[in-house]
Amino acid sequence: MTTLISGGQVVSPSGALLADVLVDGETIAAVGAPGTLTGDETIDASGKYVLPGGIDAHTHMEMPFGGTHSVDTFSTGTTAAAWGGTTTIIDFAVQAKGTSLLSTLDKWHAKADGNCAIDYGFHMIVSDVNDQSLKEMEACIDGGVGSFKMFMAYPGVFYSTDGEILLAMQKARETGATIMMHAENGIAIDQLAAQAFAAGNVDPVQHGLTRPPELEGEATSRAIQLAKVTGSPLYIVHLSASQALAAVAEARNEGQNVFAETCPQYLYLSIEDLAKPDFEGAKYVASPPLREKSHQADLWRGLRTNDLSVVSTDHCPFCFKDQKEMGRGDFRAIPNGMPGVEHRMDLLHQGVVAGQLTLGRWVETCSATPARMFGLYPKKGVIAAGSDADIVIYDPSARQTLSAETHHMNVDYSAYEGFEITGRVHTVLSRGRVVVSPSGFSGSTSHGKFLSRSLNQYLN
Image (cartoon, rainbow, N blue to C red; front, side):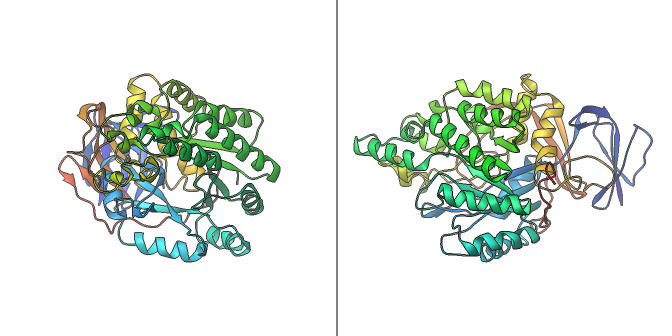
């Protein structure tokens, strides 16, 4: 059976063009001028955008953290992603201290295999740098995992010293892998947090006040210098602060292979949300924290200038009841993370509506660039003959209100409760299969396949 998607505007990084798209099995067979293609079935996309499926390159399904786990399983999280127009996630396999990278990767494969509604890949979190893990980085690359996340935050859990980071960066330089960095000065932050608690300042807003933007800027600058010394590519995850963005922009202007992502929460939410009364602010505890609203204009500008190349979610949901509430009386015990995988495409389209981004840039930051950055292009990230038929038909004029009552994520609150959005997903195809339509979800949580990725295509 072939499916013709007719009458829509096909959107690519270069803009929108009226065209028809023919799907044959799991792949796109042809893209042609309106009326030039025929199929066994037709989906009318008139008045709508036809987009390459979204790629969320930063999610945490079933992630252990702070004595609990993020509440979206691979099944519920990928289903919610599909509802929101995301057809690929790249999740993080989390190495615990004293364990091997390869056993960690096996563990995450076991979690995800047969439980994903859309296609998925993995990054590897390296929290224990030693001779064995450095050697195993090469085996991970052979297994389709060529990006390795490290932390300058969370001492005693994920934290790596500058020396350990340098060793991993040297291995990345040698192999062509990409080092992803959570760049906050965790040593200084822990001191500030301890001082706040000792002074009786225990509310959720203290999470933001004790992780000031200067300490994100400092860590980002330090990571950039270590990457410069080693010759390693560097990808700054979930960048939230103007100071960090300035460091990234300077490095890129000097020709260094430094990339960065931001997340919708940093574009739309602020420390005012962390300060909500009656412990409501706990819903917004994530790291880096939400910033003063003044940072938002810089982040939107960074997306336009490509100093911020990708928009991901850092989707790591914990329920308010029983999980976030673990931190009542001590903000340090609030699990760090927010839900968002379902709303990324919509929230960034709202940036298009507001004139912050072009249509092309929306698709670029949410699909095409992450595909190239993480070795999936042109299988993913583009509407073109031969590519996987991961296609989103998007209604730019539909209205919706975001709410926990209607979202599909397995979490008891919405970070965007009451947000009124212009634009909505109409139909989603994952490898040619309609998984979301106006009739509802018709996919299967055994449909998604593991994606063995190549290395960063901007460099290799």
